[in-house]
Image 1 (cartoon, rainbow over the protein chains, first blue to last red):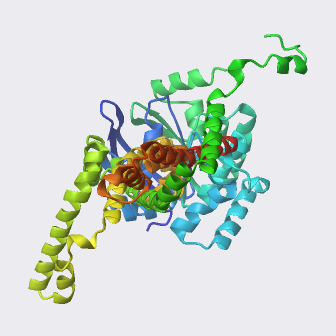
Image 2 (image 1 turned 180 degrees about the vertical axis):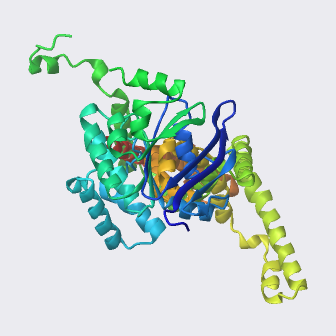
Image 3 (image 1 turned 180 degrees about the horizontal axis):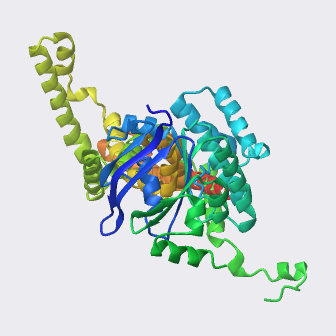
Length: 248
Length: 281
């Protein structure tokens, strides 16, 4: 491994659904500890790229390495790698039949083989970290959207991931709840977590991102720093997109 | 609607359509049944004769249902499996069973399927003997059709038949759970099987509990079909009673009331369960 080693390496990634060409040759390297924000119009392939990183979506062609490990076809190896890559979804996807605490312990027990006590101790630590230890025994239906998303983040963190992927984590939230989720993500970024975040929250991109990707039509159109992207975007498509979302 | 009506007036406006006449009818039938069983000697005699079959009816239904649940879960998982062999085998099983009348299936499985199975076990035993495993081989080749009682074959037949129905219930239950649940489980490193077991199935089974309960009620009724195999369930015993005494009315009134009692009680339990599940949602 090199001195600032590569956490994620994506090479010539293509993903074609029946008639839709979602990804058309994506190349990307993410160094350890970096926070990458991905922006772009809907249908540009942002989410598909994110889902290909942990092979939740199997690429049509192309290769992915996570922390030096190549993602192949073997289920066992894939499962082991996925356990190291946390993922937070737009619609939270909490397990509704389990309490917040159980949501955070189930994979620890099943995948990591931790005892109930150990898993619960780690789960409580993570719930404290995201600021809702008092909701440990609540079921997801009794939690607000912001609280659900924070439990979802705690659920991923409890697996001690090397990377966290966020797929529009605040898009389904009411405005007053966006901040509580972004604050948790900001703390994570400060602690040095490697993160790839698909989001439209420009404030988050400005304050937390090391690099910003602008994607369109399944390609990375621009890959630069947040400052350069907002102040002097090079590509016409980037300028057009930014003018549309920054208008208000 | 006028909401300002005082409560007493609302009560007074209770109409004939608000009464559960069907339930009243059921209650009347049960009251009448209790009356005749307490007062009429012929009915008492029929009841005492037929009740010896209750144990077989309940035992057959319960055991067959447990096997059907296991088979149904397996085939239900097969119906949504990405494994082509498992998937097609499950589909074939479900289509075969659904396309043949239950009565014919029961004859077929008990009188054709089981002997074929015995032939297969015997052939396996002979083969094992020739390759030197005589101890196991001779036991297997010594199996006769008599090793399988008609009661056992009846349970076997009902399990296989209902397994196909339950498979479709399990499949529907699993498919009612959103894709995001499987994705969340997989993204945490759980395997397909682990996610199925810990995340999907607990939710799916909860959703289909009322349907599973209704199918148990249906199975209790369909267990009467095993009387064609001379299994002494309440249907068969009442046929015997009617045949030997020519008291057809007493025999079939009694057996009907017995089935009705079991199914009404079970249906009420299913309804209570359904209501409780809805409350927790």
